[in-house]
Length: 313
Image (cartoon, rainbow, N blue to C red):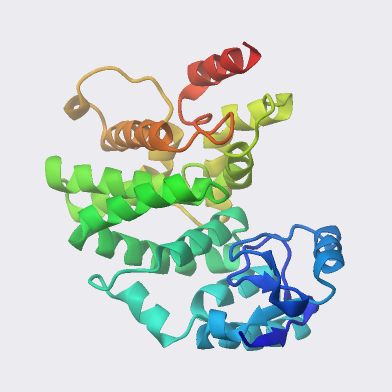
């Protein structure tokens, strides 16, 4: 174990930390992926560990590079969105090659963190290129390695609920694209539009979904309201972030609509919405029930009422 003291000013609040934090003597204080939400959280962590360290042997060269670049950005008063973008690129050349390669096995835990960062705190100036880079990596890998992608995402869904929203979004996107590509034989542009919609359907309530995955108390009135209106809010947010693709936005708009009838008789956006809805429900059903509301938001208003009644009993 080789401990290096961490400049606490280099820790951005609200973002998953891509390395473990240790205290005096190497005592583990926070696992990789831990989120410090405020200065108060940092104060509490320091009270336990006195000083924060990173184990260089544990973290590797990529995280040394991360620390160096992050500190430079913070000292230059770089906006938080650009700092978040740097966390995706500062993993070193090996990680970058994995994102570009459709045959190399990705670091799914890192992808989970990357999507969580992007969906929780998107910024207009960086959202488009970051999203497309990450989407291309996921789409390419899942097309050439569908079984591996599904297995990895199902396992990740069952083992880590703190970042449930992003993991669920990846799973729904992979399932939806697989069905559209292999069963319905859609053209690739439609397959990819479906995947983009699935990944961003809940962008307006990413943090709320992550909280609800672990929350055991009943929904608050405000939480219920956010769930009921998340589709419209996601569309508005995406438009603010520069998304103008009508099919993408319409698929999100209708992904909780009850829309009976033959799939082939519907518009392409309604077909996308139904595929997302079915994959959405499936992904929610297989998620671990560690919180009382893991599947809330995926079952529409009727599902929300059902969950409320179950909690009250």
